[in-house]
Every structure is written in C-alpha cells, then in structure tokens.
Amino acid sequence: MKEGIKDPKILSAYEKAAKEGIDPRCIPKKLDGPVPIGDEINYPIYPQSDNDNWKFLYDRQTDFLPGRACNEYLEGIEKLKFTPDKIPALKDLSNIFRQATGWRIARVPSLIDPNDFFELLRQKIFPSTDYIRGTDELDYTPAPDCFHDMFGHMPLLTNKNFASFYQTFGEAALNAEGMDSKYLETFHWFTVEFGLIKNPDELRIYGAGILSSKEEVQHSLSDAVEVVDFNVEKIIHQDYDVWHLQPILFAIESFEQLEEGFRDWTKSKGLK
Ligand SMILES: [Fe+2]
Image 1: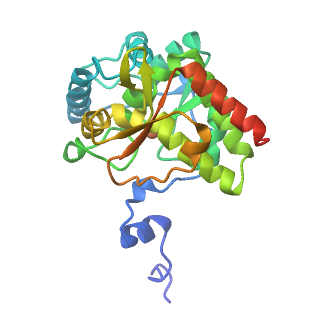
Image 2: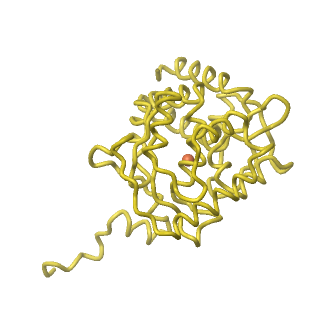
C-alpha cells in the first residue's frame, strides 16, 4: 500500500462505531493527561446559538421542576445560581461546590473512560463537559453535554449526603471487578440517573437523567411507572434498557438512606 493511503480495513474506534451505528460521542475515551480543575478552567467563546440552546432547555426544564423535583435538588439550584441567558462558567460552579461540600469540577472533553471517571469522583471532583447539544437535538441527545452535566447532576452535589454517597461510589467502583462492576453500573443508573425520592408527602425526582429530559420528567411520575422501595440487592439485579423510557424506578426515603444503604453494601462486598 502506498504511503499516505489508509488501509480501509483498519478503522479507528470512531469510524468503527459510526459503521456499526453507535454514536461515536457515546464511546468513552481514556484521558491522556491531567484535566483542568476549578480556576484552571477557561470559559469557552460560545456562539449565540449555544447560549440560545441553553436558555431554551433551562427555561423548559425549570418550568417542570415545582412539585416534581425533590427539595434537595431545588435547594441546589438556588445555591448554584445558574445564569438563564448564557451557559454558566464551570469555574464559578466549582467555587460554589467547594464551599458547599468540598467538591470541585473538572472540565472533560467527552464521555470519559469509567476508571478516569471513578478516580475523579474518589477525589471529590465532578467531571463535566462544557459544550452543549445542537439545535437539532434539543429534545434528546444520546451523548453527554453540559446541560445534562450542569442542570441534571450538579444541584445535588451541593447536598452533603448525596456528595458523600457519590464519593463512596467512586471508591467502590475503582475496587470492583467482574459482576460487581456491572452491579455498580446498574446501581448508578437507578439512583444517580433515574432515582426517585419520597419527599415527605409525595414522590419526587432526583435522578439527573430524568431532570434533564422533558420526556423523562413527564413519564417518571406517571402511572406508567412501577415504583419500588429502595433496596440495594433488588436494584443491582434489575434489568434496564437505556434506549427506552423506564417501566420500573426505585424510590429512596432520604439521601441518608441512600448513603448508608450503599455504604453497608460496599462494606459487605469488601469494596470499601
Ligand atoms: Fe449523567
């Protein structure tokens, strides 16, 4: 083969994924060096269309929150003081976290390798993207973006019990192997991404995957969903399909219950 001409049989992960129909943005990438944290994070020059997309998503989801999002999440929204008209600066959000729970934010370029992700959590650092979905993906994007990371995940990281649980999760996931890794992935899905909470009198949402999606917010509190009481063993054995709305969700009593229940389980498994 002539120099400079690529062998068509050798495909990069991106090319292979595109060929196989997997969105290449959904393939985790190993970090190849340190990532900027807190004050080291520069604010990108966003085109107006990016800020418009943020505003559209922010306004739409904010309208859904009263009576649906849990109190701890709403308190987090207050603390973070998101700017509705432009994408917030990760550096500013990181400083708020530091004061609230001692956590910081790192800017990551894409979906990152699970071990890189767990290692950052272990260090009380939340990895966030700073780019936003395009106008053609406002209702749904399979890939991570800063609306999901900021609006979905960050408010609860101002809550001490949730933040402590998430750090333990990072430690346990780094120590886990085989089926335990799979169990932890399932647990993350049904809590961090799709968790419900009994906020004293009624069912509310705390999962980031629900709170950053219009369709999931409407679906999760409807009669179409069977709600099961929090139980670590039940959760880790529950099947789920990432491509469809969830028929079964789990409800915690409180974030203390989430923190303690998970800690007991990791101890019993020797993961902590
Ligand atoms: Fe997420």
